Image 1 (cartoon, rainbow, N blue to C red):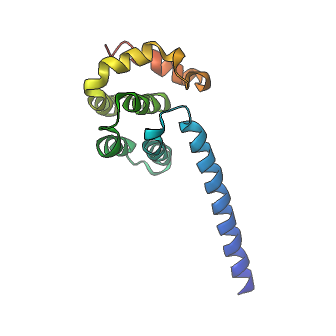
Image 2: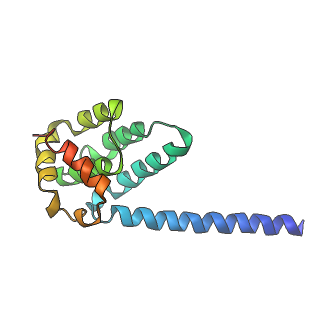
Image 3: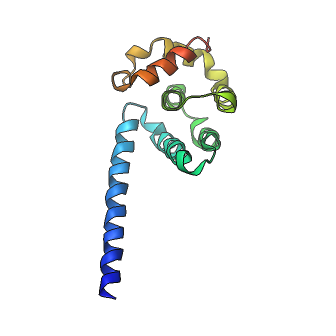
Length: 142
């Protein structure tokens, strides 16, 4: 019985450690974006990351977050949500269709943001793949 308690304590400690590291990592990822969409970005990123292992469709979570929490936020916060999604994932086929539909009426403003991305606080932390994604998409929104 004593051995089982030790194993359970080890598993619990490891889970808490991994969870704390993961939470800190997510916190750092969302820091450059508007505060009002931090939770929605985190939820979408978790769905993106977990889909790698589960095969689930993360774009459903993206749309749920948008429709439930982001849609009625100020335009600057909505734009930050769109940018956070765009730079983390290759948007192809149905993902691209969902994304374009979500951006919808904000497409003009989103195009301006993408064309002026160097002025956004997130730009300094972008990797080459994220910058490439922006380049591919910036002329699609006018």
